[in-house]
Length: 231
Ligand SMILES: [Zn+2]
Image (tube, rainbow, N blue to C red; front, side):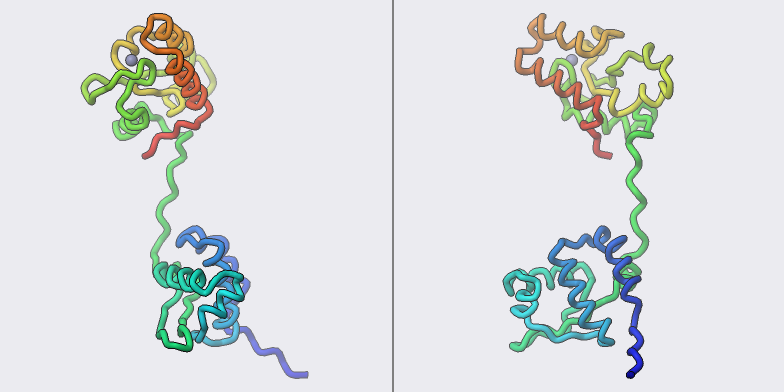
């Protein structure tokens, strides 16, 4: 029995690198991922770095058109996953890079995005600005236009209530409990629940029916963490 030829590289590790890191870092579409695996199988796993390939044939393998395969190959080249060495009538000559080589060339990963749920949006200027930006320059309550000089942050759930609650400080200054508003609303609302205050604005004609419903909806989305400020 002929001894099995040793693998020129660790395919299992390469798959782990693709799935755990590469697809997110580049990122790779499903088609690009399928084509990358196909090329990996027929280049490095067979002990060769360069692979001659016709785009029509590659397309048939991936069950897409030759044009779609060509676009995916060029996208992989742009992302640094492979190099197009030559193009001729017979097809492309491709040089595939291993996942580790691609990741090393791209340098260290960017630090993970901060967890919004743990941030105190009241303490830092940049975070306070993020709340103002989220409201798009309008008072969260009355929809009046705001300027940088007449805007304030309001605690939707009154501070007095939250101060006594468990993890009160965090909830109090969370992006889920802070909104950008005008000084008049900030002063008039005081310790009232936000829904009660919005109803007051509706009854006094500051909000029409549609605006009132829309604001109540925004209030619910805010509490559910759906109105995430962009940092
Ligand atoms: Zn207002």
